[in-house]
Amino acid sequence: MTVRVAVNGYGVIGKRVADAVRAMPDMELVGVADVATDWRIRTAVGHGIPVYAATAEAETGMRALGVAAGGLEELLKQVDAVVDTTPKGVAAANLRRYRALGVKAVLQGGEDHPETGHSFVAQANYATAVGRDATRVVSCNTTSIVRILGALRDAGLLVRARGVLIRRATDPWESHLGGVMNTVVPERSIPSHQGPDARTVLPDLDVVTIAAKAAHTQTHNHYWTVQLSREAGREEVLDALESAPRIALIRMADGLVALNTTVELMKDLGRPRGDMWEVAVWEDVLAVEGREAYLTYQVYNEAIVVPESIDAIRALTGIAVSASESIAATDAALGMRKRFLPARERGNTR
Ligand SMILES: NC(=O)c1ccc[n+]([C@@H]2O[C@H](COP(=O)([O-])OP(=O)(O)OC[C@H]3O[C@@H](n4cnc5c(N)ncnc54)[C@H](O)[C@@H]3O)[C@@H](O)[C@H]2O)c1
Image (cartoon, rainbow, N blue to C red; front, side, top):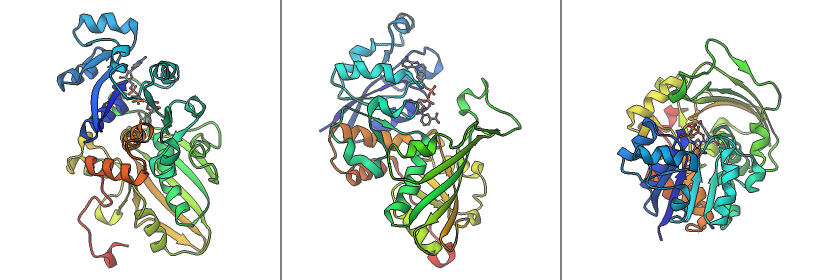
């Protein structure tokens, strides 16, 4: 069975989800919708992707420029599922339209949990999304938190975790418009929203996050202190992380010493747009002392929610009933890795 998919909002996340849908053997991208007429949406036209106008106001201009083939309603009538990647707050209003037309809807982390009543990270709660009419893929930071803490929890190692998040200022494509320069801006309240948001997926997590915005544009960097349930060695903690999906181990010893080096590595690996869908944990930085583990990792915010969005389509439409089946299909089609460099002897790696 092939699921017919629309993407509404062809921006940072939407264009990546659209490409990922096109890479899946069990999905067909019927079209994308947007309100823009500039280079961003005309790139989609150039890729041969049918483009639709997302609003009545946008339709006149988009039709006049020959960009749009029709309106959103026409697109929605042809699909089983829509991934709504519009700016924060727009999708909540769209949800009524999707529901009225019986189209399964995947929202993103800019929307609030109550809009769909379900928040999604594939490895944590795929099963509870199966057959629902809608879900929300949580934000980039929250997705990483659920992957990492979920892996430690599943290994029986996690009691509680406290994390500091250094966030990118703005996305590269719009960095001429704003962002912070030569400073760091702490969030105004503690906890920052990501910790509580992780509990929309894993309600029993004992987690607190503190966040700040820094003066770079690519990727977030997290620092965690994790209280373990018992004394465990580094190997055990690393094994728990390595055996979970979508977590890759990287090493300072390989020259991957800062966020920019990993960004460059993704380009050299030939990743589309230089994307990293995995959470990259620094293996040779991770330390354990008694019942505490300390770690740092990198989150490629523009890409991490893409595989989750693909899995959410499979869960809602029921074309894969288990998380492992869907994750395996997504990861194989995208080319997800556990290690980015040829392996060394294990004895030399940690
Ligand atoms: N950028 C990130 O790093 C990131 C990471 C994870 C999740 N998210 C979430 O993904 C969602 C999309 O964010 P983004 O960064 O891709 O935004 P974006 O601004 O890059 O893209 C949004 C796109 O939607 C279009 N649009 C605007 N109004 C519209 C409307 N009414 N109907 C249809 N299209 C419309 C815009 O023209 C643009 O192309 C948000 O919920 C955001 O919180 C973003």
